[in-house]
Length: 146
Image 1 (cartoon, rainbow, N blue to C red):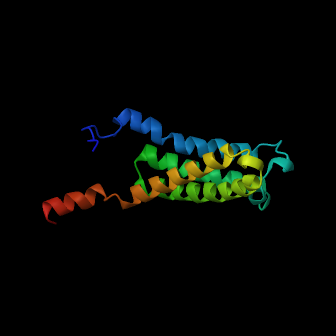
Image 2: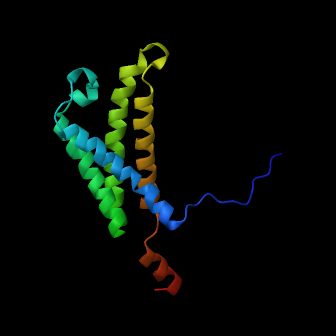
């Protein structure tokens, strides 16, 4: 039997902040791509064609701003709302991308749906994890017996 080592894969605070802010930056980047002119209809999935591109952009940008604001301000609930909105949006976009490559030989073009799926799962996992974290005030009250 292989024994696990004592290392716990936690990031130091500065590295952790850099890593978690990547998620809102991805949202902002995708959002700005949707609101900028120049997208051709041939490259869009059926999901992306279901709404105007600016609407997808607004969803992504709003989610990114909320998540980033929550992180920077240390407002957990705002971050959770942004991450949840971003995760659901990316999940829907990923479904469209999976449908687009499903019948391709060898699932050609699979990197797009994989990336969108992983980003969606990361956001939803972060949202759930942060939502389940107890508030510092609740912990303090419990410890102090209030």
